[in-house]
Image (cartoon, rainbow, N blue to C red; front, side, top):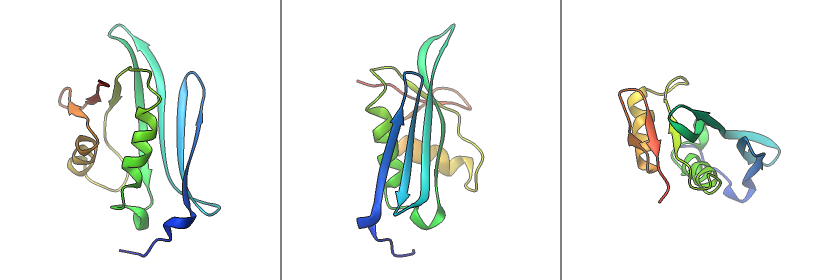
Length: 116
């Protein structure tokens, strides 16, 4: 694993009433991102976790989990729903990551985190 100077790493959060964006920044360069959007449908109100992505050299250091914790802190008690897929890791690895972050399987394709 590449050595990372964590002194220069920070998580920047920007939010509106309808979206929250976390950026993992190394000095002046992007190292990762996590985004969620407020949604309402016939099942109720929830946050849709659109993505969590961390550049390869920063993976395995807890930065993805830290960005998810930032998102969780901004849900006002509403659930977060994610449908993992894409990027360069397997679906199984993505499911395992989200489960380590407190998500549970909702159905075959979806995981959910419920505050409480």
